[in-house]
Amino acid sequence: MNTRRVDIAGSACNVLPDAPCLPLHGRHLSHDKVDRSQYPRKSYIDSLHGIMSSTVASQTHFLKRDGLYDVEKPYTLRFTPPEGFPRANIKLERHEISINDVRSTTKPLVFQEHGFQLLPFHSCMQYADFDDDEIVKRIYLREAANLLRDHLGVQKVQIFEHTVRKRHDTFPISTGEAYRWNQPTSIAHVDTTTRWAVDMARQLNPGNEEIGKHRIQCVK
Image 1 (cartoon, rainbow, N blue to C red):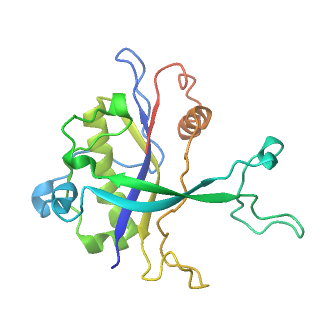
Image 2: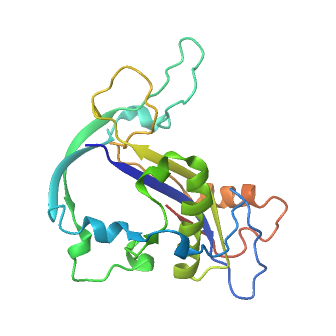
């Protein structure tokens, strides 16, 4: 069965009330409210209730503890390296994991405490709309930005990256050819560090000397 997921990576600038307002940049999205009356509404979270069991057994890969990483940082190159230079030095080991359905939890999940939260999200998008990157940017990213801005109470939201993942029928078995869509990841990883998030905010707001003086949140 084909599945489709959109990962939204965003830099949510949570600025203090008396701080200067950061300019919108990144994808240069207008954060005006979307007129939802033009589109049918559908809640992704609501549509999944009753489909999945509460716990699923699975596997994922973690970086193997190896003395190599005492002298080298783990890396993977997304370009062809010079001859004789390894494209990656990643060594992985597989771990069995249990995935729990947090929608059935009796304890409320709070973003500031748990690092994530489930929110009602009634999107104007249709399933086929995710095939069109312009529609994703024009509608879905704007919806996501509005949701983050309203929920976090921030002055500005800057979305700097988005990825549509569409699972191939043979995944995780490789076909030997390039996939049209990004595939689900099977490796546990952290996308950002504190320093990286601050550097990204500065790149999105060149010349703004106030970046780093007030609170910044990077939301994945």
